[in-house]
Length: 404
Image 1 (cartoon, rainbow, N blue to C red):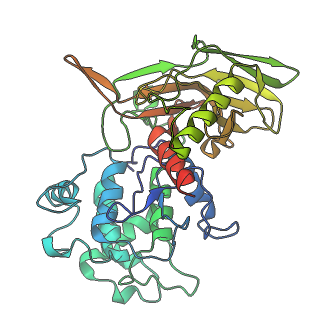
Image 2 (image 1 turned 180 degrees about the vertical axis):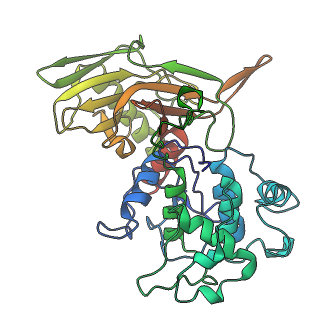
């Protein structure tokens, strides 16, 4: 079966693309509690920056997903272009969905983009995008199988057969029920998981058989190609150094430019004076060697290049600890009184990481610098890749923290 692009989840689950939702990143979602059937899937995607939460810190798992939103998720999974067209925020991806046969105007007319996507229609959309063969509708054993629209039954059968869709505890499928955000998150998560390779048999043709391709992160979640990639580990950022002794990491910053404006410390405006004094304290703090506060012994350090989207210069690193945790660390702690601030990269929990890459979509066009986004991609032991961090998510988290 064809699989979608998989970075932890190669799905930009921007369900709230038409709303005021903010990227959740490392923010704890108030209504996604441990023990919920969707907890692991949602949190894995949050860690990779692919699910949007709302301004109040919630995820609203029971909210309905519209046709346009589900098509957008699927398009971003496939690395396809998305954007506004024909006066609608999802016009580009909807046009592609019609052209690619994911759905027809009988499934959802152009005027019905914002109506909730049903479970049976979502089956058709994702089945077509994945390139699955339609299944045997007669094989469906749900208590309400007879109520599934005949136009969608074979798609539902294909999704069930692939292990991507299940029924409810009462044995029903509820084909005309709207897909919820939690259900959509789990569905996309399952679709992005790599398949188990088939066991070779004596008659399989041996080495002449085509090997399954590894899941690679070849573009940013919105489909923008990476302009450059830097293999970390041997990379050395001359703006700082990190030493590790007895499992404790200490950072010494020699050069940074954290702000490109300069508030006047003598200003008559109290707020401007206060900000100038705060920045002075930060610079004084980072001029000294500082311990990086982590809960376990440091086992690996990966220095990062300066952020490409930032006009000044900063200091960041990815650090692994002996208990299997991974952290993105703002070594300057500009928003943390000069104390290095660590954000856990839960996308890497339990993963066998062979290498890390720093990839960016920022690039030069003629005499101009086109500012894009930065990403950290993990290369796993099986050759596959997953997206562990993005600057878009980090920026949204910082913005939300500043508003609180």
